[in-house]
Length: 462
Image (cartoon, rainbow, N blue to C red):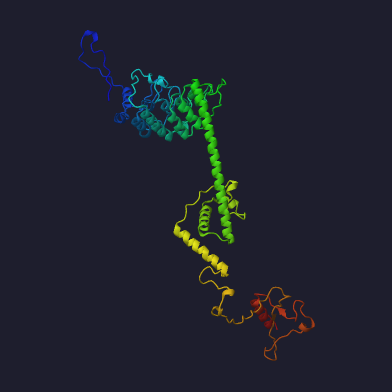
């Protein structure tokens, strides 16, 4: 939408028939942001830089946050990439979070009221939205901007003030709760040592003070002049309300801690009882079917979900399968109750097992051997006829003393007999070999080929 700057219609006292229209891209972009006109910005993005920083260093995204134009804000931030190269910060280093914290507040208490009058071409418009709608729009912008730039949550400007300081002064309790959910520090002080609770107390914002105290703000912190947030109270009524809120929050914290300790103690006692039931089940003692199956099922599921580090650390313990929750082990919630049919089947199986134990029969399934005390004549055990196992032939060992080696018998060379007969050395009887018992030549393992070769050589030599 073009903006027409009309000069004096009657210069020198005469009517003018020409209309002078000034087309400045910066003014067109500023007007499009103010009118929440996204199609016009889409056409202008190819001709002009849409950041359009003014003399107060306010960008188009900053003006969209101040005006509460959600469509333009999301398009500039997500589609156009407004802050991808440079963050939007004004001359006082206020970020988008600072501007959103002060946007819903009226100009009388808004810490950013001087920014509304910084542009004489565009004077501030009268509010046209309901305050609750403006708060919801600012919270939506805060969530979108935090998704891309979470590190700016505790950013401080030139005075050391964060977005929580601005929200505490502007009585924006919902914005404070949102920033606390994102992880903002509620005790950060500005350059004078004042915390957001100091600002909420000084401006008389009871709702903001309550939210800050519930989120962990310290009421006893002092600024550089030695004053606490109670000393900065706007009035005596605010001082009494602040003391009452602090006392109530403290009592609520104590009650919650007491309930948590009682609940933890109850859970530890219940887990101890379940462990005792499981130990009695492992020992074979009688248990009701429902409680035994339920405890075993919970124990099985808990052991599967336990971490590998804890299993390795307690592997040497006798009760490693039953972690002791009183020592600070990981708590596991109880398992849901079992169906009635499963409980009935488990109870029937337990009763049958107890009856077999009383009768002395420990056969747990078909096909198991019948005990000797309960056998009849028909339960005779068939006998098997076994054949004798042949004795294996001993293998020669390397120890010649325990296992004498097989002697090598050489054929005798008798020229008269034509080379027939058995040869016995004459020195065998007179001087036996010290390594054998009968004087025979020992045969080493694997030396059959060598013995045959030596035999042939000896035959040729004789």
